[in-house]
Image 1 (cartoon, rainbow, N blue to C red):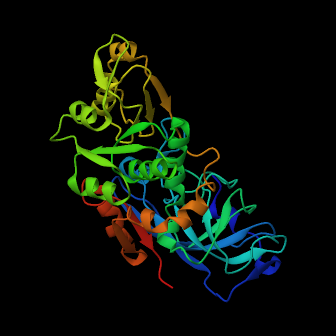
Image 2 (cartoon, rainbow, N blue to C red):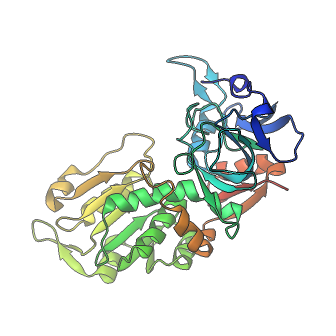
Image 3 (cartoon, helix red, strand yellow):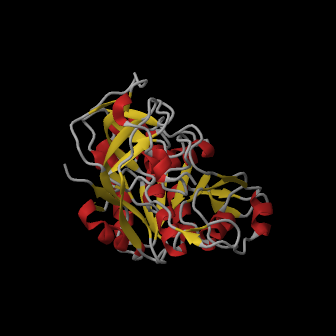
Length: 366
């Protein structure tokens, strides 16, 4: 891991900057298990090919929660736990650029590709996290590690760019067509994002299943055609009502659902999809399953189901940006809590408390 000292060792004589005299900043990192530390660190200084971003909003993700539960990450096999700078869903504005940067300027508003800098993935084990006042974009290049956004989109909605790229990759991997009928398990941000992309793709019928009524209402608000409360309803029977009746490879009746998306990450969801699947259906798994789980492989034979894994956003990180701008009102409904950076501990407490929040975005004052 590159140290912050090495990232800030270049003098500011080579850069163009806005009016600011701060030399230190606050940054959020993992603390003892289940907690964060807000620490003071040197504000980065951009080199000739770098840009300095003032963070204006940053979302909190399930990956952040995983690092919090771990209390950091191990320094090598069996090594001591070291703090992880948190936050990989930032949006902000450029306040300083290096002398060789010609395609960005001070005042540009941008979203970030956290996988696009040489010091490691931002907020996921790299030298920097996005949950800080200023973020250095090393070797900055629009289209590779940043994308300029218009001032018509609020920073909090812009901060959804990264998770919505994850959801878009899931939908791309599904190869859903307009005539398809789809069930999305899990009405968290990724599942709801997938539902939005499916409808924007022109998919005929999208159903969302979850166990939390408020999430199901949000699914309807963002354009899902129907919802299923899987804590109270028989998913297979309800799907047959919604999508009609098909059959598996043995001719046994099954819902005529073409694609199942697992954005929940529990074995019950996967097995429900497998046992409900008609002949040739697909299961696309985007959720993280945190432990090995029993799966009904016999059901795979009976349906000849295709199972597809989806990870990250190989090409989608900035493919989604313009549509995020165009449909910002729909995406804004995914945010359940806006918390100021001055209360960042509360923001993480909300995220760590099951059922307390759906999508928390931390905002930074002017």
